[in-house]
Length: 354
Image (cartoon, rainbow, N blue to C red; front, side, top):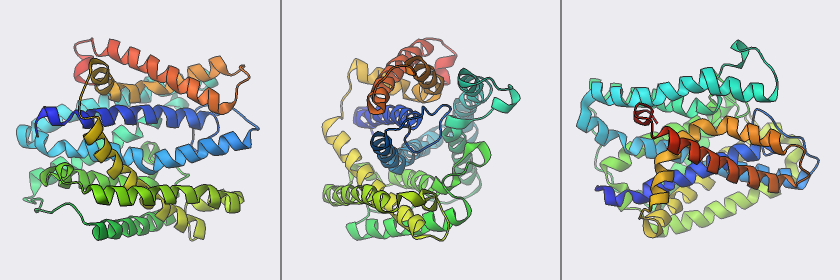
């Protein structure tokens, strides 16, 4: 696949970088999800809207990141082999992760409240990078030690996609019996969400070998996108009827957990398919600005944490609706992160890492 055909993937990565900033900013102002500093609010309607935004983003955006990362792994391994593949990938993953662990995470925490250095160490946002490191390492080891070949598989039919959704729902429910989605584990992993991440990473590899991005069934994408909309719209209704049992959604043998386990794949599958189709049809081009944003998407992901916290504290005394604050801080964080990223990418050794 030539580079000219990859512009839409780069633009999609840029879009996902914006969503990451929005998600974390929304968490900061009361949307579901942890953050360094959550500004208190009595506006239940606005915080409920932010929670729905976060639930929607959470359903698909990190899984799509893993899919994209995996999609480019087979060709890189084919070209470089085991050692050069890891020599290229590992520093790009571990160096930013440990910079965050030792520098940016303590900075973000101490902007809010003084805390000892040792107790403020952590990967936090960079859990994704650590997970990608383990997935990449496992992929390389499997390629090195086995003769497994990806079979020729045509793009899944509408019926097979439905079976996949049911499979993902069952996996989610079973895993969340042991690992609820409101708990963090090693490297700040939320293991309750990992079935999607692992499966989409594997699908990314299969998709590359079978050129699925050129075979996506637009009819299937349209059908499942409509299903995604309906699925998403059930959430505010369910929360309204059962919102006082929010902890029951995170895991365990509960109807709420069963609902959320299946809600997620019924929502994310159609959104991901629609985004891939839409970006390929409408955004398969580049401009100087889009190129800069795409090139900076990884570094934006790395550095946005303390920037959000700093802007939160700066605007904490402003009497604004929390949704307006979320929009304002999201825009400013993205612009500042992009500017800093572009400066970092001018530094010769750093631009090889990020």
